[in-house]
Image 1 (cartoon, rainbow, N blue to C red):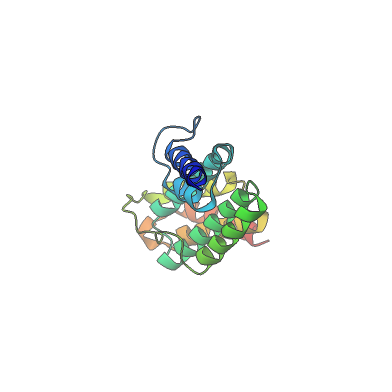
Image 2 (cartoon, one colour; image 1 turned 135 degrees about the horizontal axis):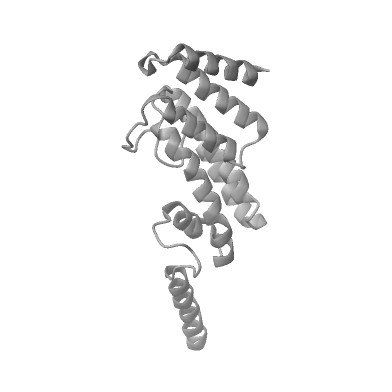
Length: 187
């Protein structure tokens, strides 16, 4: 019995030590969402190495989204939710069947508005003029986690928001360009 307890304690201590050691090969820096997923789902180092770039790609869209001031808070939150769910669809493919059950619960929580900070909660300086819309549009086009339908719907929202933002003071040429892009996206 003592040997069993000693072995069990040794295994638990070894597991705790492994859990605290960072995964070799991860880029330096803070990976709070990855760390949370690792703790919650028991990710292996191999899984972490596959998931980290997916979360980085998600961030490459959320940052310009938070900077684009022409969207209403509701539109921004809707787009943010789509991005988060798309990222989790990608991450899910790297998980084991047991881990996928946990991810399914997280997706349900995120879908209901849980799972992190609200869009706009971060203080990020807005990108002035059409530059913010163009930067966000490029990020959306390049984000492979989105379905074609999601991508098209997001781009349409961004273009319409820019077109309807009186603070942008669009030139007639800019208005015409946006109108053309909106018509193309509506097809």
